[in-house]
Image (cartoon, rainbow, N blue to C red):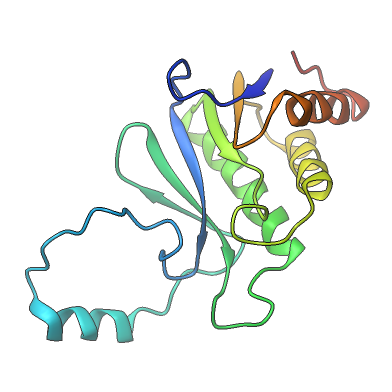
Length: 164
């Protein structure tokens, strides 16, 4: 498995992971789209949306495929928990294995909108990779440098898995 920082000019992931909340607000597409149902329909839809369970992954459209890792619940304080980050990380890797997504770009979940320390996010990712049914061929870390990639490689190697 190749681990490196993500470079959008050179990397071609099959899927890109976004750190998100239960209602898909934190990683929403910044481009506004027209709403056919009008404001009243939009309000009804928002009020009836139960949200997604923290620790899950929601598959979005696009190329690369958008994977929304649900690690926040903005209706709670704190709005994230380490176990949600761990569960979402495992769910991303499981989904990638099931769909044959060999090249993934992902941030260190819990560090984008949350306050999970980077070293904990790296440890959770390494643990999830150790338990994953299959590892991606290439794993690019978004908003992470060479030092984070090297730390993740060491953690993966220490758990008995080869990381290049």
